[in-house]
Structure formats: C-alpha cells, structure tokens
Length: 89
Image 1 (cartoon, rainbow, N blue to C red):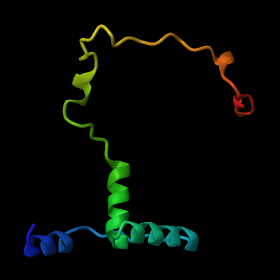
Image 2 (cartoon, rainbow, N blue to C red; image 1 turned 90 degrees about the vertical axis):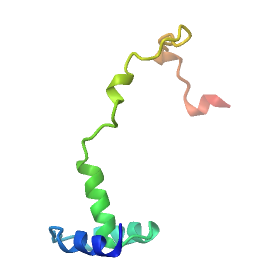
Image 3 (cartoon, rainbow, N blue to C red; image 1 turned 90 degrees about the horizontal axis):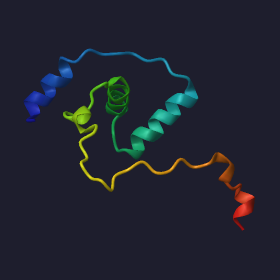
C-alpha cells in the first residue's frame, strides 16, 4: 500500500471514542508498546480479532478427511487414575 492509499484509508475510516478506567488504559498502553503499535492500531486489531467469525477457507472440509488406519481414537482414560502433583515424587 502506497502512502496515498494509507492516508485515504485512515482519513475515511469511522472513528470511535472510548472511556477507560486508569488501570485498563495503562494495560492497553503497555500492550501496545510491547507490540510496537500505536494505541489506535492495537485497539483496532484487538477489536477486529474479537469480532471476527471467519473460519479459514476449507476448514470444515477437513473433517473426516484423514484416510489413515493408524489414526484412531485412544482408549478412554479413567479419571480416577489421575495423580495429584504430590504423588509425582
């Protein structure tokens, strides 16, 4: 995307104002800085990720697509066989 396209994209985009408490704002600033993004870009990406409902193309076509006799369900494990962390020693 060239500079003109980038400018048009940013000038034609709808805007949103947010009211955040101080702790949330600090957390957003920290995350944006860690990712080397502006606050606007970080929040835009977070919202886009949250509202996205798209599955990758062909995702549902994969169900049942493995034709391998070694690909089987394992035996069901017994919950009572679980060990507590103390019994690992």
